[in-house]
Length: 101
Image (cartoon, rainbow, N blue to C red; front, side, top):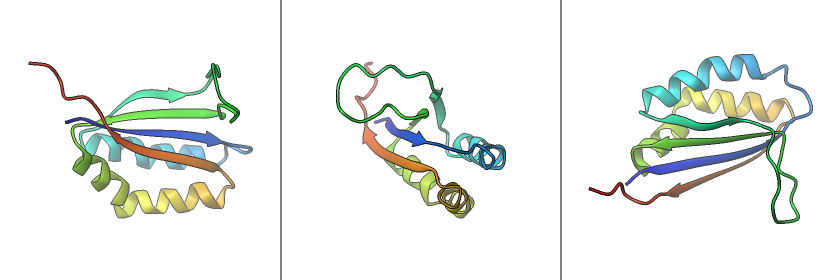
């Protein structure tokens, strides 16, 4: 069953992003993930929370692959970089609907 990582970021300074991207994109590929959304310009339709400056949606083949990606030591370094850069992040992991035959 596919699994999805959804992230919402509030970013004041983007200086960290070039290094972050150079590591995270190959890691997503390593764990057989693919980006479905990577960017911004979101429009809030409901709710009180702001939509954020950047949104990401990554599809992985299963929960185990998504968790392996998140637990990778190279990604841990990028989490630390993102946090040290003052980025407010919400990340969610959810299983999706299995593909129909």
